[in-house]
Image (cartoon, rainbow, N blue to C red; front, side, top):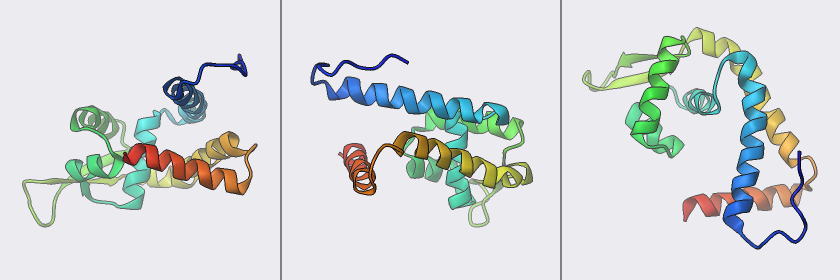
Length: 142
């Protein structure tokens, strides 16, 4: 891969985009054997954290818009990763759950994400890792 020159213009948008591309491409390769996309993996991890969310709640939880998530959820249902069931409290609402197929792969998939994280962060000290995470969260929350 080509490295950025040291005197690259001071453009944070460009640098963040390049960092995203690098991380996204690496994780995409790691998920290929599972026939999952990065976004589908994010949905699974969100549901493993909190099973039974509605699509609207999952959108808020993952900071995604409904248009992005609706097609992803339908493809995941068809592929057997998730299922929708009527909500216990409001039968008009559908709650989303992972399937046994997804749960069987949970440990392996979380390990893939952890390995991808480690590959990104391996050159940083613990303090730098914590600072980077805090700064990225600050950017997302502004």
